[in-house]
Image (cartoon, rainbow, N blue to C red):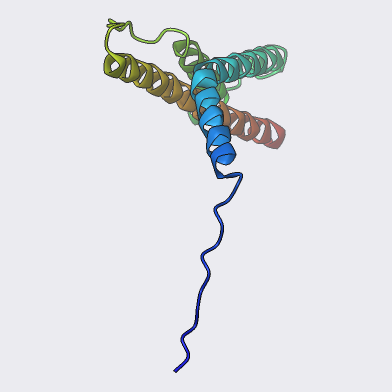
Length: 148
């Protein structure tokens, strides 16, 4: 019987360079995550504020004053409420809880960092959700206005 001889493949000469690249990429990602969340929150606050102002301005100058009652009132008030919640959640990104940090413990620093990122990310997700809901509510209000 002839045995099949399998030659081992030579080691990848770029393996260590690839590992180093991904380590640096991971470090950069972690270091920049809070800044990225803050920047995104700033943009959400701007968009929600502009939409809130435009919607309020549009409603203030329509002929709806005195005509809207009952269930229809909720259709026109919902965008204001949802966008206001989005603004508040967006601002909450900048006011995370205060944590005591022990600089002598890397585990404590890691835990505090993870808590800060987690709380900021939750607030950002809520701001995003209510912004989308607010935009949807504006569309519903526009359709209700056009049907009147």
